[in-house]
Image (cartoon, rainbow, N blue to C red; front, side, top):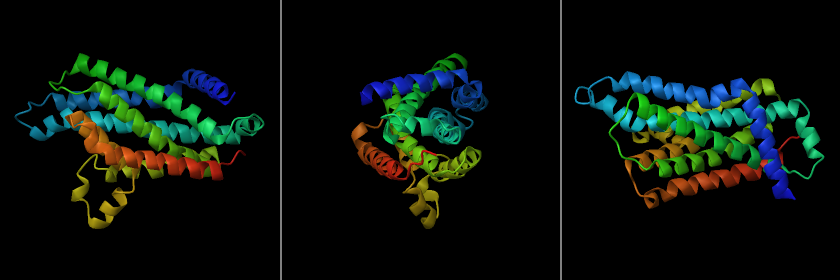
Length: 250
């Protein structure tokens, strides 16, 4: 019964998302456009003339695009749950057998499917406009991205469980997520940060996401990133447990 309710809710959420143009724009179109624009700008420089640009194009850009997909998914989740609460939709769902973790699971499944579709569009567009001579396991990278989104979506659900109104959902979510990007090792190594910021970086989920995705993109074996996966799983478990306790239906 619960499983049937989960799949039905997932299907409904998917249709609602596809009917909203702004949702598709922010979650799918913007990451793909950023990926294309940055790739074309950096890709015009000869690799020998600018090794830093070549390195960014080969590794940094795909990981940055993946992080943008993940952050967009989290902010979308925060906004949707807050809007549902303010609109009384969660209050009506409370009268059903659905529990908070079922709602979270449906939202995460939708975000995973959309993220996989966005990544596929990036791969196709990248090959079309600026092919890069790299060999990477796209299947492995996709799995790493989906694991990461599955993990940090629980953080988004925790934020949504606490945010009082939809008006504050996006700003609060952005204030939490975007600073994480600057401390995650995405733009410069974590080791280059001051000791205090390094300590902060080590408790941020995006740090482990970046480490995992960069490693997979470079061809590292999965077992070398077992600690990253373990931390992401722990973050999901902790945030989900707290969310189910503090979740506000109305």
